[in-house]
Length: 397
Ligand SMILES: *Cc1c(COP(=O)(O)O)cnc(C)c1O
Image 1 (cartoon, rainbow, N blue to C red):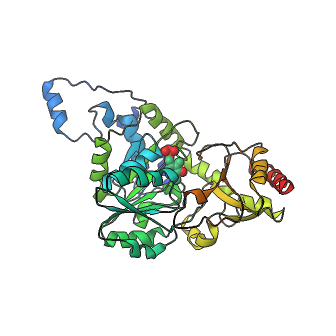
Image 2: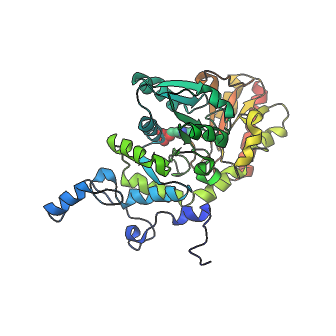
Image 3: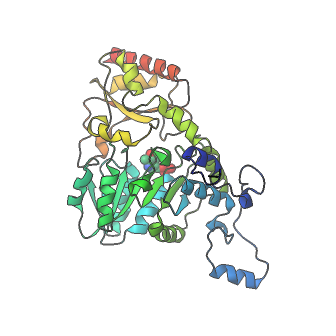
């Protein structure tokens, strides 16, 4: 077997993906091509271009340049079984476009109760106004999802683990049922990325990432992606073009720069967050009675084995106490910033109240909850910072 025949590991593909010689023109990174107008040699060339497929051909700025094509191709190469990837100006734009691509008036959507709040807001808002109905389901329903499907069901949306409460879904069991019935499955795979969960191998039709998080990785750009299997590619691409979705070349280049180090960063982010021995448990274990549990774990522990490692985002439940204790814990942290988003190199802490965004399941927390994004700082420094925070919490309680 020659070197080029050997199947490459995903860690290698994040480095090599999308770097075609005709796009890099000899430099390591694909240059930033800034373009709206593309000039044609003559009228015949213009007419020929207008009638031809624009895929990977300069046509007009909105259809991209090698800068965007390269990142999209790299993301496709990360997901075995994928046909292609489209880029969006944010993760939310990727989600709303994918939903619009596969839903029309009269259709029915199944959405997990733990979905990212803006996804839920889009279903309850704009999708409702165009006549799409939504049923929110318990994220750990598994094969029981069959009981909620109707002849009108056209999309089964998945997000695993769920936002804030981190329930891991039985993706293969659910996609198998959806595929039998011709229902499109769309997975928000932002937490795991294809490195921790190759979604298409588990039967997903369209996989979405808020690249703002781990792909960009440095908290300095917004970006989204949607990757589709062949049977769903054309429809996703048509909807994306019709909605005028486009990512500027500078943001695409930041995404590509981040992607090259994503595998090593994820390893470091996740090192402290072994799902069976999470950081909060380790820091709290030495101070009995501070943390009572980790969100999502009790109901879905058996499914964590599907992830070969962990990402660096999780939430935990404080053992009783009130908001004042939680605020004292967070406000005094030296290394954890207070802010939205995650996936950058810096650690973050956020008070969360998931019950505000749940309809059919209880968030189930017996105490205040905190979400942590573990950054790339030294683990021992982070543990010391959190241990001091848990002391503040106990003192305030
Ligand atoms: C942040 C996030 C999004 C949205 O991404 P933006 O780039 O902020 O629009 C979608 N899904 C999940 C799970 C997220 O955490």
